Image 1: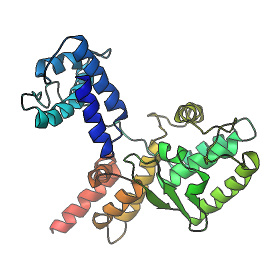
Image 2: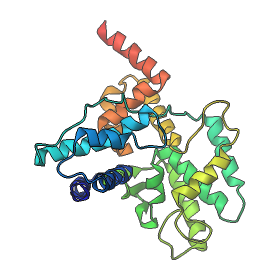
Image 3: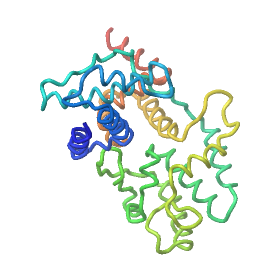
Image 4: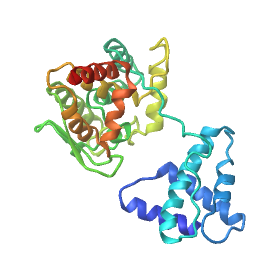
Length: 296
């Protein structure tokens, strides 16, 4: 089974899929199958037993594991017709996306003010610039942390995103104020670490890691919201929702511009951008009003 899984992951990754967590799950399944003495193509009974081997003994976790191994089984069936594919919703639906949190302008100002009060000579400017960039561009945190100085074109006012989710390269245009903030940050950063290549650096000149940023962010967000738990990724959600709300308020609406936003955000499918219309009540209400008006 391990040979089958490794071949599957190699093919999928060659197509641009990273399959980080999925790959770990599948390798775990392969080890389980081989240690159990299974021979031949995957069987439904084997996959169901493996899906239930989780510390979180509830159906959404089982459904998620089964969904991952089921995708492998469907691919394997094309090569080995005797492969069995488990029923799609045997354990029920996979857990849905967490409810996004929308930051208000006041909360964003508070968050940036707290970042500027972080200890040390470099942390305040580094984190204030990083969080501000996430908020005004909608970048994924992995994309922002993957930026190098060479990816920042202040003359053209754009960022080159190389470390995207689907291995795509895209250019992200910047507002003039964002360019000015980045220019100020880069001047200071070059004094600190003139030889370093990454844009955002820790105190010791090593690239900032997501783990480190998440830990710092948890301290910054304390008491920020009365309800809900604001996440770092919600800066991206807030950006997308604000763009769509602004577009919906304009005469030309949203319908013909979703593709633009999908490209800007680096979505692989425009359906991922449509999700924002149903994720936020204000967007859904405006979309419903537009639908009723169009039907008259």
